[in-house]
Amino acid sequence: MKTAVVGSGAWGTALAIRLCQNGHDVTMWTYETELIPEMNATHRNPRLPGAVLPETLEISGDYSCVSGCKLVVIASPSFPLRGVCRGVAPYLDEDAVVVSVTKGLEQGTHLRMSQVVAQETGKNVVVLTGPSHAEEVSINVPTGLLSASTDQTLAEFVQDAFMADTLRVYTSPDPVGAELGAALKNVIALCAGITDGLGFGDNTKAMLMTRGLTEMARLGVALGAHKETFTGLAGVGDLIVTCTSMHSRNRRAGILIGQGKSAQEAMKEVGAVVEGYYAAKSAYELGKAQGIDMPITEAAYRVLYENADVRDAVQALLSRQRKAEPEDAGWL
Ligand SMILES: NC(=O)c1ccc[n+]([C@@H]2O[C@H](COP(=O)([O-])OP(=O)(O)OC[C@H]3O[C@@H](n4cnc5c(N)ncnc54)[C@H](O)[C@@H]3O)[C@@H](O)[C@H]2O)c1
Image (cartoon, rainbow, N blue to C red; front, side, top):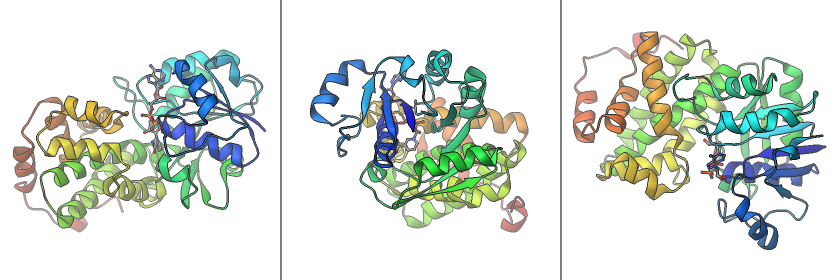
């Protein structure tokens, strides 16, 4: 099947490799056109240095490369997503299935990524997400993903395209929960990194992840997500991988902040898109607008956007009013 992956960051590259290995005819669109000769010559992408690009992978800097494709995977970071979709939209075939794999919320509008893609392309966009570091998927480490769509046929089409011996793809009818899980867990992962940077232990991280999941789900359910999605791959699954792995740039940025760097310094040092930084602002504003109690997200917002001292933010969280857990976890 003729397919295109729009975006040549680590994740777009890993997915393009998987699609080539599954026998599809793949073109990867890149923003970094200056890298095309190097990628063609070395079969390596500096964005994912550990992976080998298949001989059959075509690389293009032209949006028209999506023309004639039956499957188009949008793998841009969140900040330029709308512009990228606007670029490809005129070239999409009428029957092309469009997939969004971007994790985040649009700044200002707080729209989910698939909503942005849908606005620009007019498609019923499938969400492909889950606990999946590009570094591992690209070398065939066994991984599980979620293909979420309100249209079961579309979800199964995407499942079929990606499914492999080492890649299990589950379908889900809940793109809202899948995307909110993916975006909001990055905020908790940043906080998990901060606790590591501060020198706290496993107990702290377990508390943070558990309480973080509660507030993610509370906001998600208020915004129309199915609560069950938060106990699956796109919720707790992605939360575990992002909060515990050194592949997670959100966690790595958090560690640097916990060690005393500013958010800007930390993101510069990580050198790749840190979606949790942007998601923290949207999540904070959405929580306020919905009247949802999100103490961890609020603490992250204060540290990232108001230069609050991390130790003061931790102290404020620890000295909150006493609670009873079952009452508080009413979303379950
Ligand atoms: N890396 C992963 O393991 C992983 C896994 C699942 C989902 N994701 C999500 O995929 C998305 C992309 O992440 P990534 O890890 O591939 O990114 P990355 O940090 O590896 O690369 C960023 C990419 O953005 C491109 N870019 C920069 N400025 C641009 C612009 N103005 N317009 C268009 N493109 C521009 C760069 O060329 C580069 O290819 C993110 O939302 C991320 O959360 C990543």
